[in-house]
Image (cartoon, rainbow, N blue to C red; front, side, top):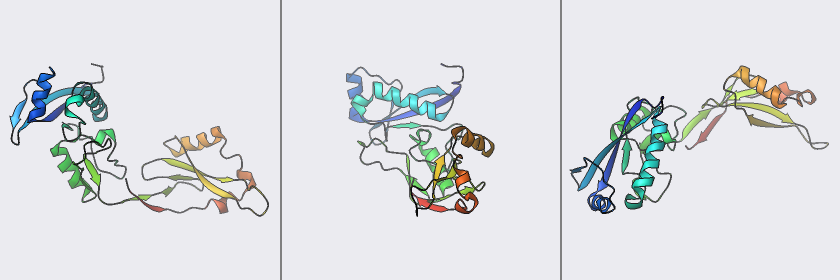
Length: 223
């Protein structure tokens, strides 16, 4: 165990009755498994990690190496708790984020309450799909872009973009404005990144104050 893998997470497995005995036949034993209602065996295993995302990755790797051949895809069979309340609904919530997958019932119920109708339980049907999630988006997410300066805008998720004008390709053509995604997380660093990458070298050829004038944009997009 690594030094920073200090947090304990509980993984719960729900195994169909027949599949449990197939595991035994394959000498893949799950100690202390208990038979629950609906002819389902429930087993628990603990993992340690620095956050929930890292633990989900570890648990999926372990499951694929030891159980997938018999049980199939872990969706609807493996559930991981959220002891630190890391799974929180906000403007940047992504259903397919590894941190937000394989949620237990308690976490799903809390998340649905926080989402106030934006989310619902994930599809439990076709287990052959790879991107199945514990929750799905029911309503489209409204995204806002915030204007930081004449040239810089920031998405609702915190990504900063630089708006630059491309030189006209011939007579009679107009300047085109495009957004360049930056890796910087603050406006001060974003300005330095623009200079370092030379993105502002064509500004003197255009009246950028007029061309790059922007306003907040509302963009409807599904997660």
